[in-house]
Amino acid sequence: MKFCKKYQEYVQGQKTELPGVGFKKLKKILKKCRKDFQSHHDVDGQRCPLHCPVCDGTFFPSLLNEMSAVVGCFNKRAQKLLQLHLASGFRKYFIWFKGRGNHGSLMQEGKDLVTYALINAIAVRKILKKYDKIHYSTQGQAFRSQAQSMHIEILQSPWLCELMAFHINLREQKVKSKKKSPALFDGCSLIFDDEHKPSLSCELFDSVKLDIDLTCSICLDTVFDPVSLTCGHIFCYMCACSAASVTIVDGLEAAEPKEKCPLCREL
Image 1 (cartoon, helix red, strand yellow):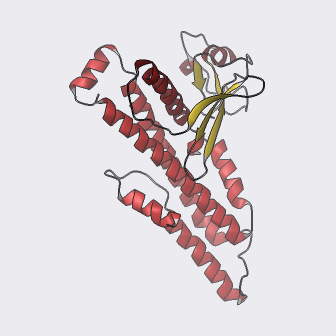
Image 2 (cartoon, helix red, strand yellow):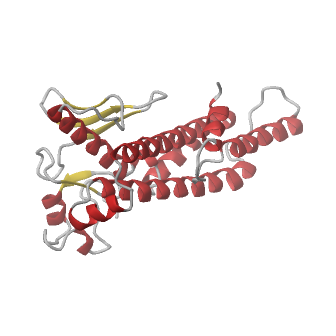
Image 3 (cartoon, helix red, strand yellow):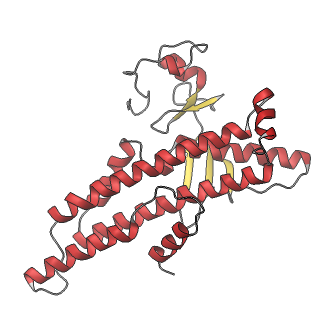
């Protein structure tokens, strides 16, 4: 089954309407561009120019808005889901009282959320690859790099990292308690390299793989009480607070807006 059809079936099968990538619409833009160019030049197999005003004026702005909506929706829902899982005290009682604390349903929601993130990430990757193929360019790759710098690349989302870490913790608890529980990820594990440095590795569908380094770039030790910045880089909470010139009590929320990531210098 072609991905376009698979993606459309996924979108149509959702109970609630969520932001997504207009994969079919974007393919039509590229198809029209190639058709119009060939009709004007009457040369079979000729590719449209590197800088195409038709594509650049509609394709990239549309995809940019869709990616922003997808990552915004994912981050919001992932944050809320983890808050439900990790709730304690009166808040936990209130959640269970409202009937939202069913463990199985929360785990299923987590799996659905991960699928939502991954299938949209694959849609973006495939449509940009098609753009470069038609235009014989690297503009699609450049756009993806730009999206990463703007923090709208969903596989770069700190909340996806949080879901992965939560899954490993949950799996360890399950092993100790000998209780069976559905997993958010398949093939997600903690690995060590030759220098015994840890990283979080996860094999995802359609050959997508995530590898997240768990070494703090400030203290050069394994992250302790890790925190992920908006750029996706992970540090010890104490190290991040120190770099941002704030106290642990005040937290990173008290950091000045001009403070940048110690590693990539992003705001």
